[in-house]
Image 1: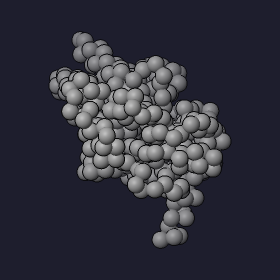
Image 2: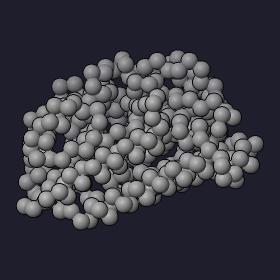
Image 3: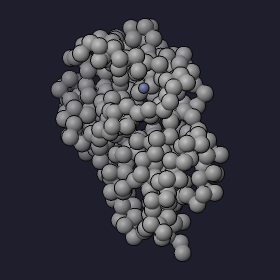
Image 4: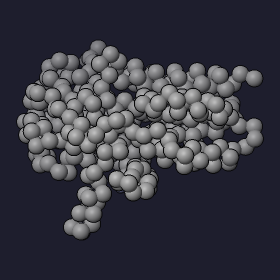
Length: 320
Ligand SMILES: [Zn+2]
């Protein structure tokens, strides 16, 4: 068992490749926010959910530095000491906080919004594809972490959050029932997003379409849409190589003659990659994974943006 863990740890730690465009292993440590004494969260989606629920009664902070997502974060010792002072640490779960395995944090101050939703989580044999140093590409199994790309999942997580926060911070419970409360407004927004997703699903059934995705991050959104997709293994943080383009070509070759191709492409990828895809007749839809904070847009607005881009792409494909 120990040996197995050790091998996993060795394979798991040196992942500069996953850090994003041009990022280095060092920047994965990042600079943690200075004051971490209130409610700590690990994703922009949780920041919005908790802020809506707590309505200014508690400070809510993203524990991860702005430039790195929680899945890739390797906290420094100082960062760990700061976050251990948090009153509550709210987790997204589904492997989004791998760093938590390396630090000690009292169970009584941890709150996982995916707890109880295990059967709704998506586990894949190839959730992470990367190389170590100059080694070849390979994949690791695990959960798809981006649960927040599904409005339905967010709704369930909001429900879990309300329940768990009410237990931990009982003084907040009366605000729960108020239809004008932040949580109620958030619920309404998520229901609208959910309905918007359903409308896209209905429209999709009218088209002969092959959907491809450049990685596993979209699985919760795809499930909501009822779309079957071919999942490519394009590494995060680097533009597709010759063999990656070949993987796309193989996927396109399997489609029926009449069907058109649409790819869900991580918003962070280079425009040159999108141009090359369009040249091959593939409809490109950029998806904001909402892994990093966007100071100007809420997560609901960003998810709405994703659905709008999908809707526009379907409009274009539906034109004769
Ligand atoms: Zn590996």
